[in-house]
Image (cartoon, rainbow, N blue to C red):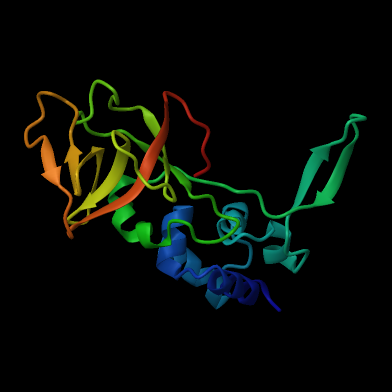
Length: 205
């Protein structure tokens, strides 16, 4: 089996279209098409593709072991290579891509339900400032007063999640923000719950 066949097979096994994979990895769809057609023989982003697809880079490149090997430390201080499931990765996302990617948020057992965003609006100030990095968990169900990422008419934004009986209200916590409250309705979809914020985060892109 050639690289192009292993690549396509791994993508299909992960349940991803070319468009969904290119969003996750951060490349053009043309780059993926060239791999699967055989035009690209040695993809320069092979490690990123392997992480997104839940296989080893060796497998994609030359048909080596499909699972990754992870270096671990023993109690005696020796390094060993042991068979392990693929390491879980999550990436820095663009706000504008979330409406395309949300349906594939937790794409496989090897892919983390966590992803990151850089705050780009003052609507949640002062708690969340523009430029801060936030971590979102797409598998969590929100509780009252959680901060959530939502799609409102396919536009991603951050809101505070408030419950009032059987109603859910989405609030912009900035006291000077216009249209502070929105009632949860069929045109609104919750993508995930904000679980962490930080000035500096190490993410793969």
